[in-house]
Image (cartoon, rainbow over all chains, first blue to last red; front, top):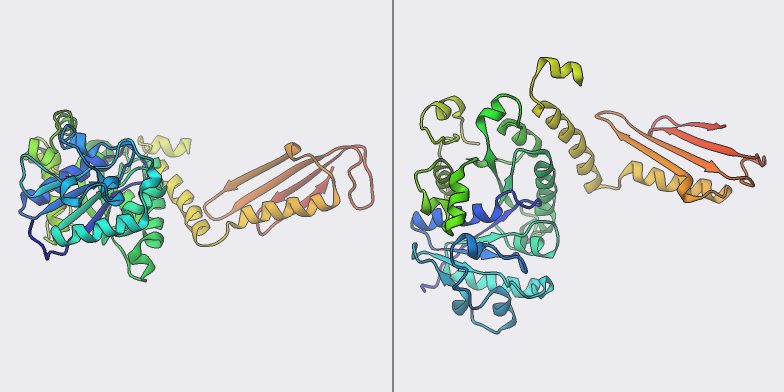
Length: 276
Length: 107
């Protein structure tokens, strides 16, 4: 492993469960790796790990984050290299340990060590606002707030934005953490008919710049069934294209914001929009 | 709201309005103490100093609106409760109103 890098730490968070944090972590992590960067995705959901399953690495887990924190294993022993993308690694969470085993000092040391080895550290936060969630965001340079266009998800995102602005290392240093909104499970036609909060509604309420819009798609479920990020499993599908665009925006590229559709053309034209 | 729905089939505008009102309150509660919660606590403490009442006979209603919120405190005071030197057989103390207006009635 080449040393001397300095990774950007990204936390994927939401407050509410089931909105697509793990799916998005896997998809964006794989997209960044596919674009040539060296990426580690870290599961912070101690006791309820699932990033291993979504990445298809569930049978290869030997050591986990807490083993590394406790000194039972060295970091390179716990990192699992993806079989499809040689630039993509997973640091799994513990399935059996108590979540109190995550210590702030321990997480800080692991993140500092990972920073030397990777370009991107993508932290998959557990739901809620407890210890696991606050530790996942603690060292982040950038936050991706995953939101569904639905009232409870938007409310919880607002709460998480408050925590990001108060409880992260960057916030405590008086700096502003870089925040991006990723709207998932979006139905353009429902929003157009006024049946679902629109992107503009969500942006107006949360006041966070938009990273991407992931349309609802059966490809996402299919990919998780197979244990492969949608950006690898169906790279040309609408959600995968939306995740690739989001990954490119994270890298600083300017890409026009649009909702990719399965049948290219009509929806893209109708709902095409400028990047935030 | 119903009339509003006649013109717009979707429920998204209602979701948006509810969120805007709720989050305005939650954000202000995050930065400072929640005024209505503080008022509720202090009003009950003051009344409790003068009148004995059972906590489960206290009804507190709160309605957070876009520009005005109301706090209604309705307290049943059992026999023997004292208000202003009078010991009524049965009293009901109602405090109604928000931060700006407060009406006091003894029924």
